[in-house]
Length: 288
Image (cartoon, rainbow, N blue to C red):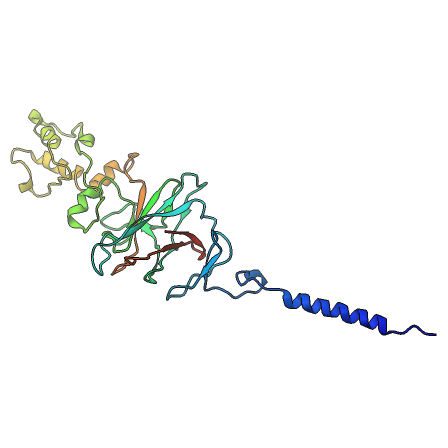
């Protein structure tokens, strides 16, 4: 008597059913783009696995992973504007830990306000400002360095690193609190004089000059000073001369960037504010 094929067919049916159930039970992680997910509009919080609805603007493309900068970069020191509608001195700070293994380029990073939906991208800046044109460079933080991120417009068109000579320009620009206010003493670089100073009149005058004093017209000088003395004082005072003389000093630059987002109005809200910082790939680095 021949064996019946029914038991074999039954076994095949059971195996097929199990495979179908296993396929149907599989779930694709919406953040797992390697497995075909197209999910891009939620931002991800690694610390609490909380996915939140985006603000009223398109969110950066994010993935379910932590930014490599998260352990070293933080948002700190938020200061809101005191002026209705105007950015004023509204700012937040970005700090790079001293433990960071290398400098970090934050050009292209984004800052978001959850309360208002406003966002801004950090652009390039100038490391050394020159009145006749400055070289634009990426904004790079070194370990231990901080960046003040102002919402408004830069007094020098770009983000910049303050230096000890910028106090010469404070009276001609709309600068925030904390801007350099005292210039280097020209007497520190002035001597010996390159000409004969009869009676030390020129030396005495330089030593008594006020901070950031930069005489230019003959009427600005003491009438007793010689022509050579007046010309020499013009060569050692003023912003550009100050940069030329002091730029190689160790303390010439302040250890921070001043970044400007160039917003015409306030960036952040007064209440229930949360500020988000995204890296250049759109991955959340920190929140405040």
